[in-house]
Structure formats: C-alpha cells, structure tokens
Image (cartoon, rainbow, N blue to C red; front, side, top):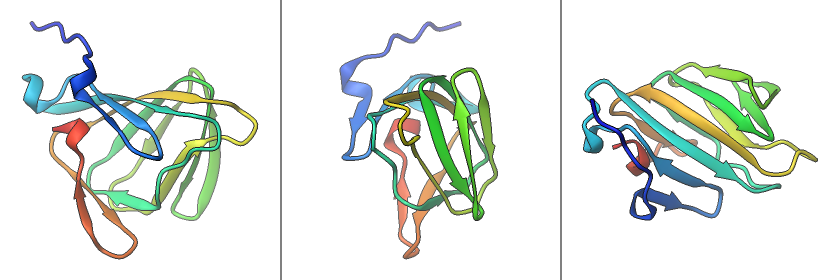
Length: 125
C-alpha cells in the first residue's frame, strides 16, 4: 500500500487546465494512471484523441464534452466514459463556472491532435 499526497511539482498547468498527478507509474502504479483536472470558467482543452479509454468523474462544476460528434454535459457526481482513439474536446460548461474532475485510464498512453501530432501526457506518467 502507498498513500500519495499531491504536490506542486507534480502539477502541470497549461493555458487550458491544471492537471495534478495522483496514482501514476512514476508513483508506483503498475496498471492505472489517475489525475485531477481543474478548468476555470471558459477554459477548454484542444480537440484531440487519447489512445486509451478514460473515465472522467466530475467532482464539482459541470463538464462539457464533445466526443465523436456528440456533445453532453456532465454535472458533479456524474462520470463520463470516453472511448479510445475518438476525437474529443472537454471544457468547463458554459455558465457553469470552474470544473474539477478526477480522471483514470490504463497506464501509458498519449494524445494525438487533429494534425496527427502525438503528445505525451506528463501528468499520467
């Protein structure tokens, strides 16, 4: 057993969100990566695909999710299951203020943007 305490040095902040690493391979997890995402009102990530299935559990606020051409809003207490290799965009829902979610996926993985560029996920390593 290992208790993992979040620290500032394991938080990656981009113009779109802050991702705080929790249980990841660099912290001893062998099968899963988990992290906390915080987006302020009006923030949204880029259109991209992830090569792993993900589960986003909304902790506070409302999360707007467009995936595979369909858009849904998930509120605090709800979970969103995102399939691998499908374009998606996630952000704070309009009028909903900031959003916070916990994300889990199989360890490893990367993102691919619309132009085909592959990006590592440092908060999931």
